[in-house]
Structure formats: C-alpha cells, structure tokens
Image (tube, rainbow, N blue to C red; front, side, top):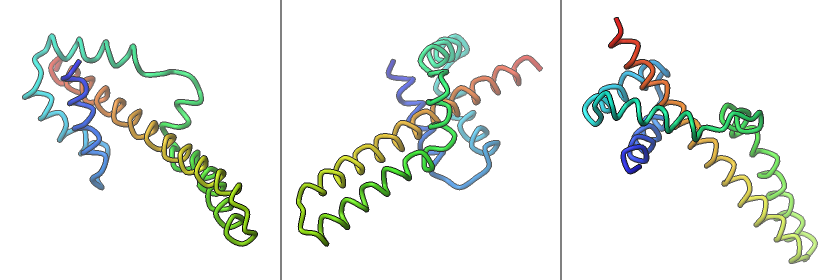
Length: 131
C-alpha cells in the first residue's frame, strides 16, 4: 500500500527531530488526519499489526538499535585496524561485513520504530474520536 509507505516515511521524518514521543505523535496525527479517512486508518492499522514482528529479537532491535549494532561497528573498526597495521587485506573483509551488518541492523530498527510510531498515532486518533 502506497499510503502506508508514505506514512512510514513521514514517521521517519518525525523520528529525526529531537522532541518527545507525545510531540511526535501530535505532529504525525495532524498529517494522518489529513491523509486518511477513518476506514483507511483502520485498514492501515490492521496492515501494520500484521506486518510488525512480535519476536524478542525484533523488539530488542526496535528499542536498542544502536546498542545492538555497536559490536558490529567494533568488528568493522578492528578489521580495519588489523588490515592496515599487519598488511593483511583479508581483514578488510571483516570491515566490510561488520559495516554492512551494522547499517542493516540500524536501518531495520529505524523502520520498526517508524512503524510503531504510526501505529501509536493511529491508536491515539481512535482514542480521541471515541471521547
């Protein structure tokens, strides 16, 4: 769904800004209110609930993406250090692989956070309309 991808991109934009989660939800709530009607909001919520993983690893990556990727940044740095100091080009493979894994983990965690923010915003809209 193109609208879901658009919402996730808007949530990623909100995650970039330094503000409280309540402020992020408030700003995103206005955008979602203009973009989707009630039926589309329910459809997006159902799709988000179906696509969000519920296993422990994904929840850890969502909440602590930088901490999870830190060991791989260390492996990348160590491979670079050993590759340069000992003239061993094979160690550069560790640098490349560590960097790729670290970036992939951070990107995955970022997308999970954005999806969660969209879901929280839609739930907030539902609560406000009930009141």
